[in-house]
Structures are given as structure tokens and as C-alpha cells.
Length: 519
Image 1 (tube, rainbow, N blue to C red):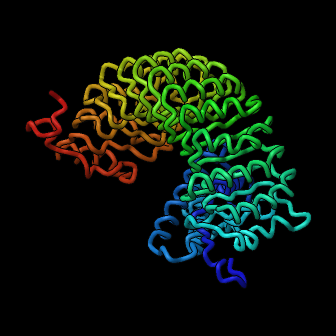
Image 2 (image 1 turned 60 degrees about the horizontal axis):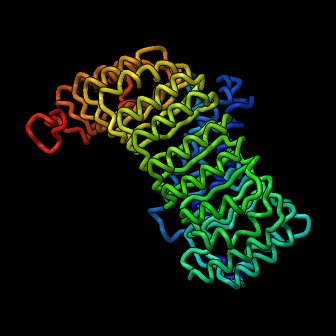
Image 3 (image 1 turned 90 degrees about the vertical axis):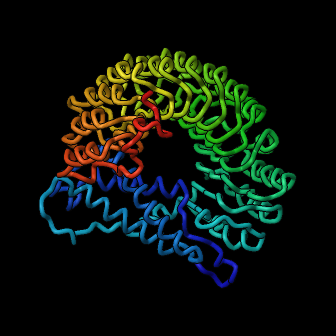
């Protein structure tokens, strides 16, 4: 990536952007689900299995490469990129070979130029550490966008902080090519700039792109607030066909949420809407709920860590009635409370397409959780992921939970009930529910639930023989030493499927210690 100009050396190749990571996942799916030399020997995976595996492969490879990069902070990340590609190839072959016997491991599929894939349509300058960008460097870096006949449709300027001079350069280039763009990622483009300058730069980008017919827009990681949202007003006002909008960690306050609602002329085609880590509170939750009401095609909605309380939570839940195509719902880490849970439960029973639901840390308590799981049980959805960690759930809600789990036994892949108060009685009920024929179940997490030997044994026996099972997490509980041994014994033929027990407290709740939860 070096050029004649010394300052180009600051461009880092790691980490890859979300777009690049998604491209890799899509590539892996294609490799797993398309006939090839290997798959003729080992059988193809279904598209659904392939997608699930591809995500796991990509994130495992990403984590490995990231750890490698952290050890060499001064490098340009090139070796991390290579490790990322190598690791994903290796894991992919393992997946294709799963269930095959004793074949030669040297027969690797190579994924050439994997990370640099879709080179001609994706233009991405986001790799590596965050850095300020000057006008000269911007000219050099963005040169490919000025080449006549270039085919770039997706651009990612994230992770580079533009001041006014560099902003001018970028804006004039964008204005000239805006008609060919479909996906624009302007996340984290004004980091550590003083607010007046940041707002001016946003305005420049906004008017440069006004009228572009975008499919996807990402404005995350810019502290927008109401002023920032309005700075992007020209751009937002001209978007009638957005399919994806990302506003994560973007200072979406109550007023900013209202401004978004007022500016975007139509969210009729919106399929993905992500708000995360914003101080939206109840008023913001209400404004966001009005956007949702006007988004009948929404498939993936995230509104997590936004400090929305019961009033906003009820409004959001009600508004989801419109979104009958919803597949993914992530509302974790808000202050909803049990009442919101009851509203949500009523609404969820109509959602037949729901595949993933993330409702951890919502203060739902037994009452709210029972309503939610009853709603899910009554829906005909093929639910794959159910997360309800940290909601103060006790054994009172265990039967309702168990009935819901049993109703999804053909689809469920991941169940997360960690950091609750299920104790032995609750864990036993859940374990018994999991004994049936769960063909796809891969992860069960009941860590930190005050569980002792009895409950842990029931859970272990229920999951150990399942065909695709990958991990049981019962760490942070109260298994006595003998209990730990017995659980390990159940997994003796597949020890990797049992998570660590290093935070388990064998004396928990018995000697009047801090962990006395079974009083």
C-alpha cells in the first residue's frame, strides 16, 4: 500500500471494515454451499447451515487475527490480514470435512485475495488505526475514485478523521461520482475534531451526496446529536429508497431521533435499522417508534443500550406490530421493566419470521419474561437465537421458558439465560425441556445462575449427545468439587463442548459467604 509519498505509510490494513467482513462471510457461504472438489467428497451444507457456519468462521478468524495485530501495534496490519485469510480458509475446510473420516488435510481450498475481494466495486480506506487525514493525503488516497470508468459502488471512509481541507477534497470527488454509489459508509469521519469543524465537514459530505440513490447509509460513530443529524439534512432528505441505515454510537439524543424522523422522506423500503449505544431515553424511543411504524419492510431492528425506559419501551414494542417481516430484533440493555415485557409478548405472537431475538438486561423480571416467552411460543416462528440474560429470572418463570424452548426445538441453535436467578430448580426444568430432539442446538449458556450439582447434571446430560452441539456454559455457579467432576465425566468423550468452570464457587451459598443466593 506504499506509494512514492512517505505519508502513505500511515495507512493501516487492519482491522477490515464491516463491508469487507460481510464480503468475506458471503464468500464463505458461497464456498460452503456451492459444489466444489471438496464438497463432492464431503457433501454440501444447506444455505442456512452455511450462513451460520460462515459467521462463526469469520468471527473466529477475525479474533485470531486481531490478537495477532494487538501483539505488533507498530505494523501496518498486513500479516494480520494474511492470518485472517489463512485462518478462514482453514476453518472452512474443517467445516466442509466435518462428518468425513480421515481425509488428507493438505488438500486446502485457497481463498486467494479473499480480503481484497470485490476489489473493483468496494473502495475502502478504513483499515488500521484511526488517523487524521490531510488534504494532500486525501488527494492521493482517493485518486482511484477519480479514474474515468471506475466501477466503485460501495465506499467506506470510516476511521479517518476529516478536517475542512481534506473534507473539501473528498466532497468534490464524491459529488462527481454520486450517481454510481449505492452503499456509503461515513462512520467515524470526524473523530476528535472540534464541533464547529465537525459539523461543517458533515455538511460538505451531505451536500456532495445529496440526491444519490443510496441503498445503504452508515453514519455511526460520529457524535451527531441534533446538530449533526441536521448537518446531514440535505443527504437524508433526498433518500427515498434506503434499505439499510446505521446510527450506532452516534449521539442520537431525543431531539436527534426526532430530527431523523422529520428529515427522511420515506422509510418504506428500509430493511435494516440499527441504533446502538445512544442516549435516546423515552422520548427518543417514542420518536424511533414512529420511524418503525412507517417501515413495514423492516427485517433487522436494533435499538440496544439506548437508555430507553418503560414508556419508550412500550411505544417501541407497539410499533413493531407493523413490521411483520421482522427476522432479527435486538433490544438488549435498556430499562424496559416488566410492563414493557407484557406489551412485547403480545406483539411477538404475530411475528412468524423472527429468527433471532436479543432481550438481555432489560429488567423484565419473571412477569415480563413469562409474557415474552408465551408470545414467542404462540408464534409460528422458527426461532434460532433466544437471549434473555440478566433479567432477574427465577424458577417461577422456568416452566413458561421450558414450554417456549420445546416449541422451537426444530430451529433453536442458541439459548442464553446467563446472569439470572434460576438456581437448581429452574435449571432442572430447563434441562429437562432440552432433552428432546433438538437437531440444531449448538450453544446453551446458564452461567451465573446459582446452580448446584443437580441442575448442572440435568443440563449436561440433556445436551451432550446432540448432533451439532458446541458449548455448554455453566461457569460462575455453585458446583461442589464432586459436582464439577461429575459434569466433566459426562463430557469425557467431548471435553471441548463443556465451557470453563474456573469461576465456579464450590462453597457458594453454603458457608454464608458473599455468594449466598440460596437463602
